[in-house]
Length: 109
Image 1 (tube, rainbow, N blue to C red):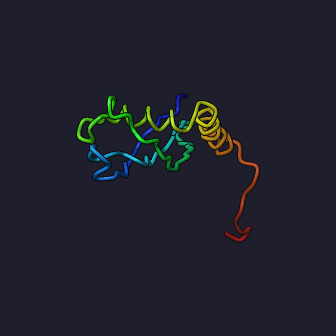
Image 2: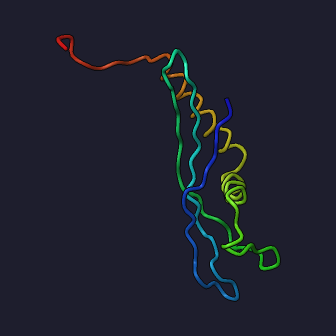
């Protein structure tokens, strides 16, 4: 299993000095799933991460940002340790779904 990272929304400042459409915040999620005996077990973490001010020399125009760029920026801003922790959390959610330790309900249903 390998977790999938996505960025669903990018917040941006329309004008920042000489730059336009400067991405400041990324809304990300990390998901994975595993199907066992026709039952799909899934895990998900999501959040936001702020970005540092861009370097004008290496600035990427908003219209030219690819999804892969955004995911790379989100992971970089979070840091390797946090990325690993989120991926571990997703894996743990899947494992817990496959092997639950709690249940709820009523005995008369």
